[in-house]
Image (cartoon, rainbow, N blue to C red; front, side):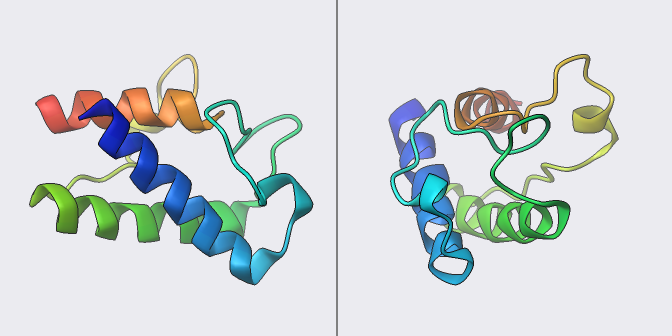
Length: 96
């Protein structure tokens, strides 16, 4: 399941980058920064990315999850800092 989540996250980033045209997001990896210092997305792009990602996850796993909720925002380390941390967070949410 982890590899399926990784693919969904990376594909969503690639699709978003078709609009943004950021060199840093042309070939995203698990280490690609999403939010915080040296991130590749501004706040508006992050919101768009999260909305698209939630929709894709619902379609793929038939389970609605909310990524940007109080639980995510209150964590000591943001699940949105890079692709790997987001994949790990999504995996936990899908297991609940």
